[in-house]
Length: 85
Length: 255
Image 1 (tube, rainbow over the protein chains, first blue to last red):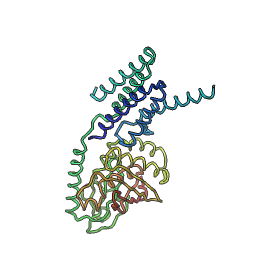
Image 2: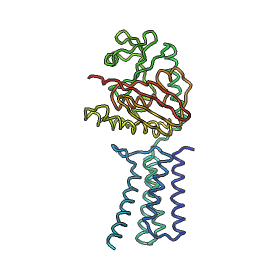
Image 3: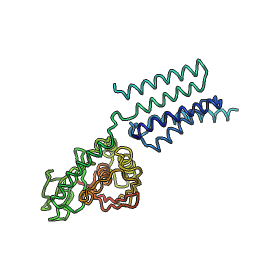
Image 4: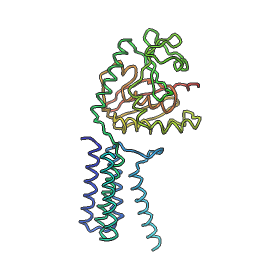
């Protein structure tokens, strides 16, 4: 099977299984979902290495960058929460 | 608008609406997460290449190109290692000295002669060939980005060598899918390449001897394009799943 198609199938399965499992466990924190999505995406990209349009000139994956920025925001918010309490 | 873009935008749009509605109206985190999943999938579809050419087609076309060059090298009984030369038009070409006089002329003289199939450079007959990798490097787009940076600076060897690993890795693993992993090391004017799981093997002994294997040839083209200096494959050998190749970067071309 072409690795690009495999990548989309696996990512879809991973994302929806994550939601199903977390929702079944009663998880109500959105940041947990986003963190796991980020890890799953980055892990799959590293394993399957699909060809994709990257942002030049640093050759950054825009989806990974977006997820990473959101992940950093979530972590920063948590740190601020802990510090202010 | 092509199908990929339409599907990607559709998924992003649907995901955004679902996520916003679920987060602010229904107040359901799992549904918001599903919406975000759609957004992620949509973005992935949007950044995928529009044309996924089947690997077998690419393989077949490269095999045909290699077979032509193999026949040419066989005809002229070329045995000496070729020199990869950077071209001003963007395509790398190689000079193969012919067996009748298997010594290498000065690099500056090679670049000055007209690019016919057979040319005599300062009394040294040789073949001018465009290797299959010269087009791959040009079409990948990676060198265009590198070129601006190279032109803006007077680069010494140490400046561009670390960048080569990125370029070679992208070309061999991501773009051409020739190998699954590459390691690049440098020492003075030599580049040491190790590539794992070569997925594309050809039965062209003369081509491999003169120009290197397709993977090594592509790497040589990349080094040549980035450094703007002539490159020669000194040696190439197979060690289990790995192939090891040593490239020598020759002195810079003047003018």
